[in-house]
Length: 410
Image (cartoon, rainbow, N blue to C red; front, side, top):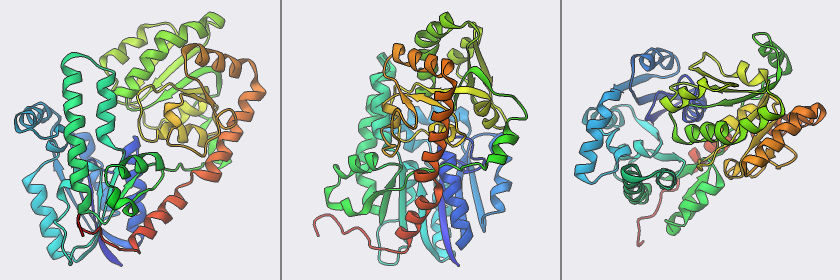
């Protein structure tokens, strides 16, 4: 059993948001065959309470707190220094010392850096380095560019600056790793275009979804019965793509649905709702839950799940989770860009405009057999193509095939 160093910008537990779901699956898998040394950041007392759970899986846990109120100060410092804000926020001399000390004393065989922010702690390339895997997950520079396209004024300038500086950072830091991974082939192929000399070391490890047993699905029904006229949306509700999605849905889609049936309601489930999301609860037919212990009962009790994402992101776990529960899903073409094994019209419905969304959801409400058929097809699709097992096997294959990047120009 070797020793593995796992670096993460957030505690991988609990797996209650997209980035933590992936990190938790990887860490738990690593812990089956390795002594895991975990280094992570956290920003609140609530997150601190979960550190003890991680100690059950790890040989050692080093958790460095970066208070949320420090963000503005670090943001200003990054602006003055000409560095990416999202990298500077996770820069710590103490954390760096712990990484270096762990590498020297623990005979680490593999270093796994989760997210671009953790790439700054990769050691300089040397023959005695451990195998280094850098999981960018998504191409964050592209994310900030997409944010800029949906904002104005100072926010747009900051986002464009972050996108430009972060892309330069991503391209420059990748050669420190033996392998660079992304959540989808689409993201991996886009990054290969920036580093053509390293294409064979850039690959995709897709996300998966736990497929609950039918008995577990029945148990989920106990807290709430299924309400065919409820539409659910699940996500962290201070995340810009989620905020944009629910506001657009409430403005452009829900009124048309409630004109057809005033009993149709929209439930927004997720932690940290932004002020503009909280305000949506004042509208007829809209409820905002805030943080909940488990999102699955809300998904399972809904007649349909709407995921009207208009700002691109890697792979929305909310789609996989809803499909795994056998729920009919209506989403946008952008949201499934990285999910090429999902067949639109068969496994879920895809809508581009507000009118298309309203028509698709109305059809699901009026045609119960269609909704049931779509839900069954969604669950079957997850079972065939989006289980965690094959993805974790791809991760194992990388770890057993060390072949470092050659230096540029060799």
